[in-house]
Amino acid sequence: MISHVLMFVLLAAPSPATLNQARQTYSGCLSTLLKTNLKERVAPDVFETSLSTACKTEESTFRNASVGLDVANGTSRTSAEQSANFDITDIVENTKQRYKDYVETNTEPR
Image 1 (cartoon, helix red, strand yellow):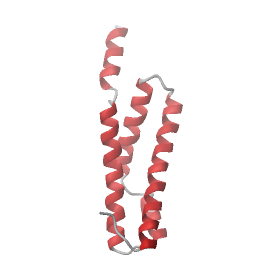
Image 2 (image 1 turned 90 degrees about the horizontal axis):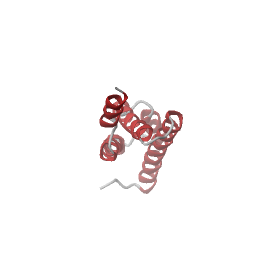
Image 3 (image 1 turned 90 degrees about the vertical axis):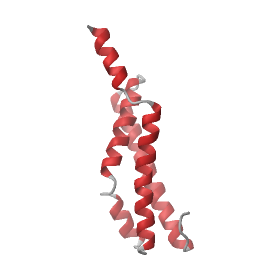
C-alpha cells in the first residue's frame, strides 16, 4: 500500500521542465505588464503598485511547481516555501528594476 502512495506522489510531483515552464510563464506575464506600462508611460511607483496584484495565477502556478519539486526532492515544506518566496521576490524586484532602467534611459525592451 505504501508503495502505491509513494508512486502516486512521485508521479504527481512537478518535473524540472514543469518548473521551468511555470517560471517562464510567470516572468512572461510580468514582462507583458512591463511593456504595456512603458508604452502608457506609467510612473514607476504606479507600476510597482500594479505588480502587487498582477499575474497572481501565474505566480501561484510557479509557487506550487517550485514547492512541489523541492518537497519531492526531499526538502522540507518550510524550506521549499521559503525558497519559492525568495524566487518570486527576486523576479518581482528584477522586473521593478528593469522598469526603472527603461524609464531612466527612455528605452523599451526588444
